Image (cartoon, rainbow, N blue to C red; front, side, top):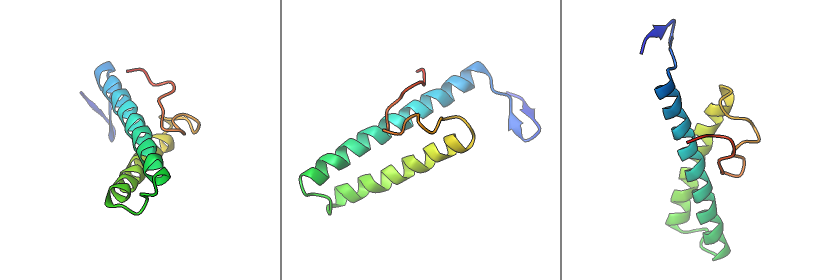
Length: 88
């Protein structure tokens, strides 16, 4: 891996690793959202588990926001927490 200016040259292996990371974040975001909806439907939205899931969801949203900011994720892609165009 060689540096160019302040960044790194993106080789195929590194690019695939970033794509796998994005897919994992989208999957975790979707799973977390589903768990939260289930807990809320059960009236358990004041529990420690729900609050921990909420914190995790905020973290995943922040990470996805960085992907969008740098043009690595479309605004529509992953809006529901599901992988749409990312290859694994």
